[in-house]
Image (cartoon, rainbow, N blue to C red):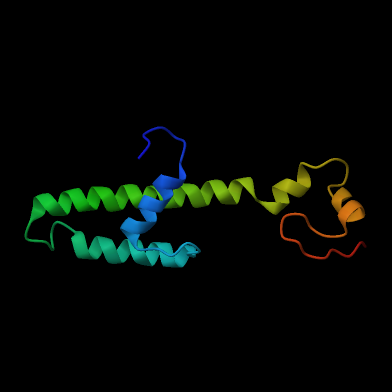
Length: 110
């Protein structure tokens, strides 16, 4: 795992394996998987507390990576931000392409 702020594909793959998440997991599935793992490995519930502390550290780091990735994805691909920062009215791509370039929705001009 990289220790800097840059997330790599390997970090995200590792985090998904730790939490047991599918590739296209929703926020509810992420939270549910995290809570399930925390309940299983919480030091108060486990007999081997040293192993439980290590597992909890891994689970928390994996959850942090997945949530951070989701937040960055939402920020980078936020359609409203994309529209506001474009030239002019923000609807120039409708004239050029006839559809929304991010979500590929057909857009009707008003």
